[in-house]
Length: 522
Image (tube, rainbow, N blue to C red):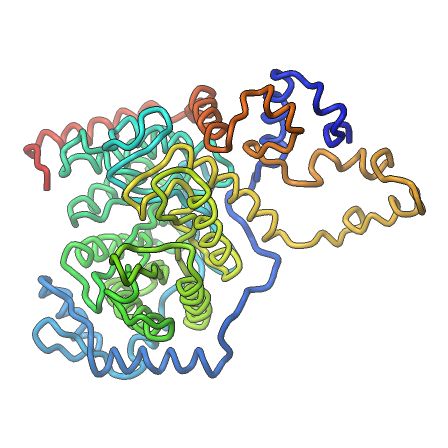
């Protein structure tokens, strides 16, 4: 093709280059609401190794136990389910958690979106990419690092909506610190609903905020909220319930989990571990503890409402044993991830982990290498719900604009990898081989002409031109190109239509709730 020929490439003008970038982005953009993998899982442990981890997790649950703090109701629920209660320490007889979960937890579920064409199937061989979550700061090349605002939050919802490789618009993409803590969840939920029609995550920072999520979902879904076939609410929120590792759940997370479970909304039960501080330093020890914590939390959800959708989560990072800082992209957390993914498949529930993680303060080579070194294991392991796919910087403290679009570019490539090898008649390309024969190039043959636009992924950010062309266009590095790209996405953004009556009802609910509570920073 002509754009691969150096002599032609060097003569192109700036406007043509921008047009080709836009064409490349459109041509290579994934279109499905989620990915169904067609390649095998990557395994690091055999049956004997996985069984050993499961046995060790049962030993932790039976001998050491898990603390469920500051929520007597949770202790009573667990006691009725067969657990042994000693103060706030809960011990589970061997095999109890697994039997509770496997008796009722679904292996897959549908996360409904405002636009039903964007419904996401969670579990099985499906993968969904989700933006980063929870950063108090944002970063861009123009203003540097600063506290996030509601405008930033809305911008990232719009970027996620405009990025085909993001299958959900996310949850707390960043913390809008210009809005009081006790009210900002309402603005964040409304932003997800207003500025995107993709599926989203709910608030978990207090049980009453989880309940606000439910009430706003009811307004959004209307008569579609209840599934007439099951009589249960349809799942419109998948929300993050973190264990307070090591081996502890607090009342905030338990209270939110209970609200969501009662309303048939999905809970991601995730041990959040910095290995060496919140778990042992070894892969096997961290995996066993993670599994024990997850089993305890998943059991609680199923005891609250058997059949409520759940995801087994794992977030395990290594840490610098010199400074105590978390580190990303290292091999040990990847081994934990591969192990936990296999354990989730054996348990029979969907699995969540992270990808796109880094400790870098800039959208630089460290950010890129660490991000792909965490995203690739998530893809190969078979993670169903990949949280933190796009934007994560500085160990999660910052949400980066440039990093976001760099990561969505990588996620789009992962969809093609998960699609596997095309063995159709067109994929085999035997007609092309017959047409061309020995000693002649394939550039002009019919098969190439029919396939060249979609044959290979074309990044909207990478520069593959000659040095002279690159220099004539400003000698930009990828971070600078990403800066231009996210600005163009926001400039071109068009909000999805929303029913005015639903919009008005949501705004009325938000006003009523805000008027009922004083401003609070807790």
